[in-house]
Length: 117
Length: 112
Image 1 (cartoon, one colour):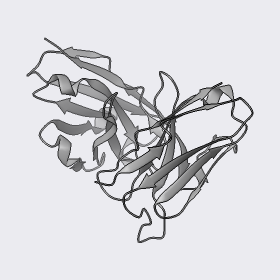
Image 2 (image 1 turned 180 degrees about the vertical axis):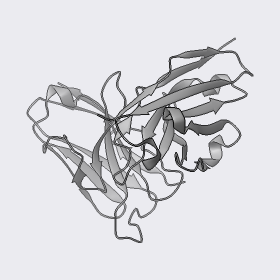
Image 3 (image 1 turned 30 degrees about the vertical axis):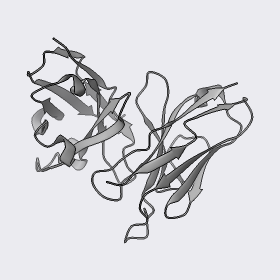
């Protein structure tokens, strides 16, 4: 069955970076794009961007350009998102989700990122 | 960016009764391919969002037919008939017409 397994919770200091992962299984990794979505209590759900897992091509929400960098490792069927220059506003739960013809049917379990000194 | 406005922000329902949630878009969600790009998700407490409805009115696999959705190009309604305990959570509408895709603020469904 399709699964997206995300890495564990992160506690980071302001100004630092974190890199979270999303390991896919149960399907051909390069056949579907992966999206990343941010969830906060205040802003709700926000799309960060998506990556073409075959070519590595990316498309970012303007709001997150310069903040998030999406990459993939096809050999391990894993997508990554690096968040840089962290501030408390980056504290959130981050989800990866598999894109398909009918939308995002499969989601990871989410990663909580906490930015605090 | 397209803004999706949901109403109400919360709804309290007696088990077995029906509930309706509205979603209004700031722009027509009818694509050039004739598909209405409106989606509904349920996020149960402590869980990831789950796709319920795609392309305005199509039930995702495994979703009970107590859920239904309809609408026009900008106004949409999710209906849940015979609400059950497992339906508790936050319902989000979302669009995929153009990037960035966006979501509504969510409607919290509770049981009386």
